[in-house]
Length: 562
Image 1 (tube, rainbow, N blue to C red):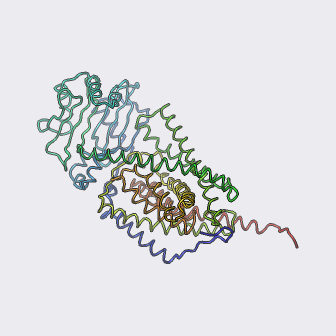
Image 2 (spheres, rainbow, N blue to C red):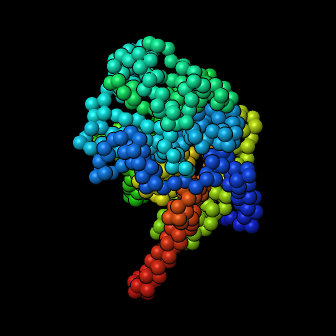
Image 3 (tube, rainbow, N blue to C red):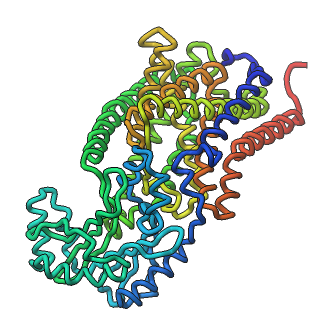
């Protein structure tokens, strides 16, 4: 990090850093990319995924020819990716994914395209689940215009919920339900005589269990739901053991507390301190400095929320409800942008007051080359971090037996513009390095007078903000990111904010680009490649702009004492 008033320069041993970067890249490719040693999440992408248009066509054909529904083709179908994350998580935890994929996945997938079709005359909608590889319809749900099924299911008390569901069903007997279900079992190629009815006579719904199809402690269940004397839905799925569900619920509850108190509350405290120290160090900094980055953050975060519109629509949010949700999200984004702004101003002020130039200004001599070298350094450190992350994953898998599951709400399949997913890497790199490194470190150093502790505390706060990711045990990500965050802190202390921001952006961009590669479409693959090289393009543009600006100034007539 440069002293204030000194020429901008990065002291980097590129040869040594390049060797470590190469090792990190090799480790990343070996343990996270290559199919033979990749994670289960990447292994499942071996088969070609059908397009959403193909999924829609399969759903329409099924609705018209099998369900005999009149579909309004003038209404646009909503196609989203849905996942049985509980089942996937159980299989992942028990190392049964490969066996399941070879044995049952073709007929009972955990990942599907769900197509929502509108019936003519506004008579409700139908959700049809389509296999993402074969295009085969595997489940359906028919919801009439004035359906009361969803409202009954929303009842938190189990006893009251069961009573409401029986009323919604039309007080059907078990024999009535079996009579309606039998033709569907035949259509699906199943023999009812070989199935076991798992539903008691006075319980809502109808569940068959197939004793001949099991994996681990999970058995195939064929679930029927009813409304007004007819079938409301059919959903075949393997059961999830109660112990696994209880474990996940307990871990999720723990994650919510860690996120709320460890991350949310302490980040608010940092935000308040940032406002205070922005005022106290106003003579060392400028309140103009953070405006552009904060505005950029607000724009990207707001667009990212809009980009997830299919997720909101799949959850039933439309019209006024959707507007309220987007407004609340915009207010939250505005608050986070304000936190970023004051962290940039306050952090810059604290470092300059200490005599160090942590965040170089564009008007300083040598700024263009400085940004260019910061970008090079950022790429090399990002490759190192990717290797470190790979080693951490292996160690955690062998020690605390970490495992992960799917999250449909964060999937590129559920984005309006999946190719713009990696722009979130810039949002994370700019904001997190500003809040937890540029401001967090000097703030903590004022309190504890120890550099390592000053780096550790904001890093742990940052790490706790990632506990709600579907990775278990929930302590997995805090352990991983505390190590990664301390390396970010080292990069920051050695090279400054711009270098660590680039390293964070590149690190996230590479990881996010693989989500685009997995989609398999040429535009998404190209977008993934562009994502990886975008930090270099941005740095080079800054370099050229700054160089041209300097040349322009040097050609102006000079005035002064002769």
